[in-house]
Length: 490
Ligand code: ADP
Image (cartoon, rainbow, N blue to C red; front, side):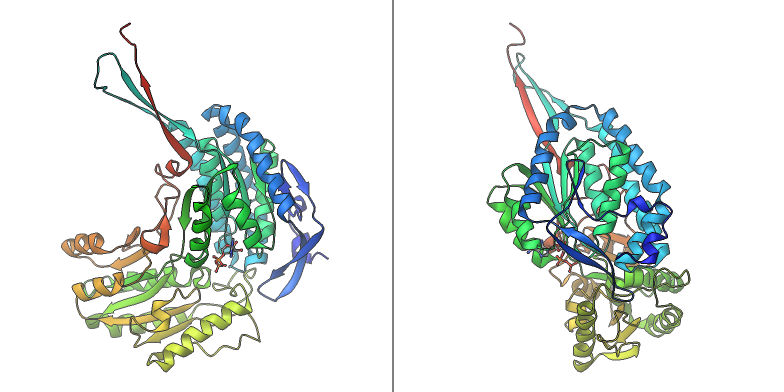
C-alpha cells in the first residue's frame, strides 16, 4: 500500500523501502509500517533488517574504507558537492517525505533539508583543510610532524525529530574526513534516510561508503554498531538515557564516541531585554518542531519587573499558532510523533498543575483522540516541577519568575543537562557575565536560532560530548598521528 501523497512526488524514485547496503537495495524477511503522525494512518511498509544485514553493512563499509580514504580531499569534495546539489534540487520532495513521516510543518521540513544539505556543502570544503603540524624538535637531528587520518568505519544511530539533518550532520563530516559510514535511523522516519541514500547513489558516492540499515530492533542493532571490532567510531543523537547505554557498550572495545544527547534549555528574559524580540525568540525556540528538539526552550525564566508584559505578549503570540497537518501551508505546529509522546507531555502538565502551576493556555488533551497537543502555557512554575526538571519534548511553555541575575544563573544551571541556553538582555556587562556563567555548550544571546553548519553544535555535562559542524566538527572523525623523524643529519 502506498498513499497518494507519496505517489504525488515530482520524483517517485526517491521513495525507497529497502536498506541501502554496499550500493544496493536490500530487502529483508519482515517489514515494518511507516505511520503518518498527523492522521495515524499507515503510509507504506519498509524492510525490517536484522543482525545479518547490519553485519553486511559494516563489512561493506570496512571494504570501502581503503578506496575512500585514499581518494584526495578534492575528489571527495566533488562527490559530496554533487550530493549537496541533488539534495537542494530535490528539496521540495525531500521536505514532503519528511513532513509525511515526521509531522513537522512543510516550511520547517524545507528548512531542515537546506540545513542538512548545508553540512554536506560545508564539510566538502572543510575536508580540504585537514592540516597537520610541524613542531620544533628537542634535537637538531630530529623532526616532529603531526598528520591527521580518518578514524575508519563510523557507525551511527539517529533520532526521528530531524530525520534528514541528524544524518547529514554526521555523514558529511565522516565522509569528508575519509571515513565510511553506516547509519541506523529511527524506525519512525526511515524514508528520509533512504531518500538521502538514493541521492548519494546518484551523486556517485561509491558503494559501501554510505550505508543505511532500516531496522526496528534498536537494542540488537545498537549492540552491533557499538561493539563490532571493525567499527572505529560510534556517533549518536538521542536521549541521555539511551546514550548512557550505548556509551557503556562502546567501552568494551574503546570506541571513539560522539554523543549529542538531551537538553533542558533555559530561556532567560532580563528586565533590560527588548521584550518584543524576546517574545519572538521564545516562540521560535519553544514551538519549532512542536517543541520536539533537544535545543528547544524548556524553562522560560522571566525577571519579575517584566513578567506581566512578557506573559501577555507571549500569550497573544501563542494564540495565533495554527495546529494541523504539516502539509497545509498555514500550519505552524504539527502533531507529536506518537500517542505515547502525547500522554507523556500530558502527564508532565497535569503533574505540574497538581504541584501548583497555573494553566494559562492550552492543556487538556486526550491522547486517544489524536497526536496533536495544543500549544500550552504554564505560569507560576518552579524549577523543581516535573515540567521544568524533565525535557518536555512538546509544545508547552513553562514560565518561571525570578528576582535577580545570581538567582537565575543558579536556577538555569541547576540541571544535569548542558546543551543550549538562551537569554535576552541589552546591558553589555550583564551579557558577558551571564554568557560566561551559563554551563551550556551553546548560548543564544538575543538569538533563538543558533544552529548552522559554520557553528560548533554540542553540549556539556550529561548533554554529551563532541561537536558537529564548524571547523571543529572534523576532529571527531580524525586521529592525530605523530611522526618522529630521526637521522636527519646522517
Ligand atoms: P527519542 O526519545 O528521541 O526517541 P531515543 O534515545 O529513545 O530518543 O532514540 C534515539 C534513537 O536511539 C532512535 O533511533 C532509537 O530507535 C534508538 N534507540 C532507542 N533505544 C536504543 C537502544 N537500547 N540501543 C540502541 N538504540 C536505541
